Amino acid sequence: MDMFEKVFKAYDVRGLYGEEITEDLAWKIGHASGQFLRSLLSGYERGQAASNRVVVGRDMRPHSESLVQAMVEGITSSGAGCIDIGLCDTPMVYFAINHLGACGGIQVTASHNPIQYNGFKISGARARPVGANTGLKEIQHIVSTLRRMPIGASLAPAQKVDLWSEYRSHVLKFLKTPRRLKVVVDASNGMGGKMFPALFSGTDIEILPLNFEIGKGFVHEPNPLVEANLQMTKDAVRKHKADVGICTDGDADRCMFVDEKGQTVRCDLMTALLSRHFLKDNPGAMVVYDLRSSRVVPEEIRAAGGVPRRERVGHAFMKKAIADGHGVFGGELSGHFYFRDNFNCDSGAIAFATALSVLSAQELPFSRLIEPLCRYSHSGEINFQVRDKDAKMKEIAEKFSDAQIDHLDGVTCQYEDWWCNVRPSNTEPLLRLTLEARTPEQMKARLKDVEAILGKPVAH
Image (tube, rainbow, N blue to C red; front, side, top):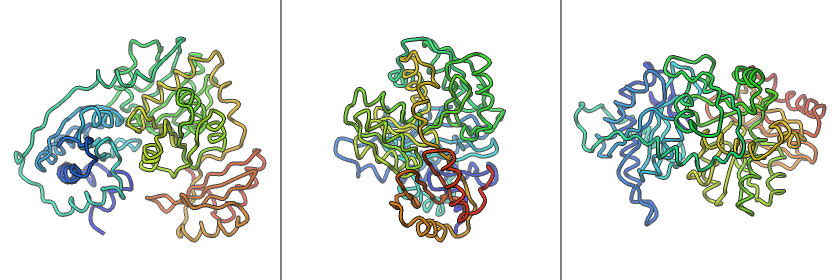
């Protein structure tokens, strides 16, 4: 195991700044990424070739700027050009790669991790994700062979470009608000604090901002999947009688919604709701959802005339499924939403714009639109600490051997009136359980059956 094994994850590079993530590592990842992304240029389809330039962006962490400076030097020393788009949300890097025809891009961010963390999200041409199975291991190998070259050894140009006007025009194509809405937005002291004013000021949305200050730490953990982190949004929605609340994560690629009563709206229910919006103009199109989602999602997709596709968890799988099947939209339980007309990429800003378009077109309050979708009892994702993950998943399959079983991602057992999925974490000794049944009583009973095998859940 090499010294970089700890920070190279399944989908990105991430660790403690100063100890694991340093300017020296940033330079090496820049150089290795430039070398790797350039090597792919000749392999793209005819007429789809990308230019010999890499886009770089950064989040609001105090160390992100110095990491970018080192990374730019590393990229240009590899012979690739560099376009620095500055402080931005991660989806803006995906936009910039496509808008500029770049061969890839890197966002310096640690997403929802605490302020002392940082890292790198790497994408290829057309913003295709670079993960462990799609190039990140190759980049890690190159990094392990490098010694940092002297500053000034650039072989290609670097430039800074402001793309906010073009990005705003792109995102606002998704916003149509027939009636004015009052919206609480909690940016979690993350990149939403820059993104929301830049994209949505001057529109017919009244935004009540929470935690828009960036660069000095987090009032609460920038992870909207943790229920406690939504409390400020919920309180503000009720206090100001807002139509909807939204809370974004650190790099603003994920979001969670809260209805006008201050109740959390699960993201699979948002996938079901937004699917109808996209299928109205794209009858017969495919919509992708991750396998943790409620059965209500494929039911709603079919009812709207679409083709549901169940997929493994993770943005690499979701984006590929949408691209391969010419899907129009996709959603994950984790708060990532994907859009065909956004290069098949996820975007917190476009999820926000689309949700407001759907809500403003209806006279009913948000909670009434979601109510018909709450027809099953869903556990959400529950973690269990397990040493031998494969053995426990095998035990689950044997316990429920009379179910319809598949192994798309972990093990899924489906019965007519309930189902469960148990899948392994990529980075921790954890199994993650999702279970759904027709009634709360039935769900609790089935949870006990599964917990008898997996043990006691891990508190978040």
